[in-house]
Length: 262
View 1 (cartoon, rainbow, N blue to C red):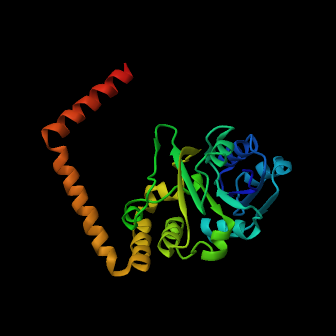
View 2: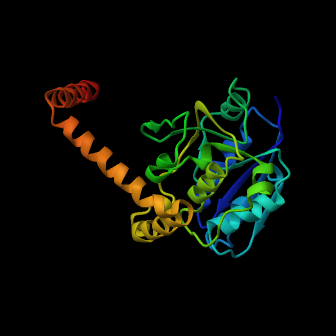
């Protein structure tokens, strides 16, 4: 399979991260892509980085925007690919073969195809089967997700009223529509930069409020039921931790960590 992929990088005042992301994209073994960089009129060295690499970039723009999702929507409107990948400044593909391995994977099928994350230390694996409760507890990794362009034709763009959680809102909207086929590939496509806006502790209160509004919008009266289910699940996990088996498990894990250190 050799689909044409639009890789979209959104950047604002992250020249160092932008260069790393550009290198990660342009060093890929997979070459059937276009590369779009959407810069929010940065006032650091980002524009110089773009100019230095413009021969590797199919389209770029640097102008003021109203936030990350406004910039991502600009990229969607310009993109010509069969699939879209959002790899924002600071995020990296997991090695030069990452995109090729992902696209040629036997499970590469569907409308929204999501992989896993690597961090600088550790990583995160996502479930094969999704439920409404999953999206209350967590979200999917847009840096490790390929979206069919037709998904945005059918479902619209990112909701710009949300400044932090619109990617999660879009996943929920697609999932609840029963029109979009999700598929998980057990492969860490990207190395996630944990310094992004959603992981900034100064945005915690705003993110909490946006999540509350988003869940009310999409889950309505069922949202309280999902919150109660998560609370019960948390209480059950705490009970398990206090059992003899749970205590022994923590001791074993601690011993393993000590052994790795030494």
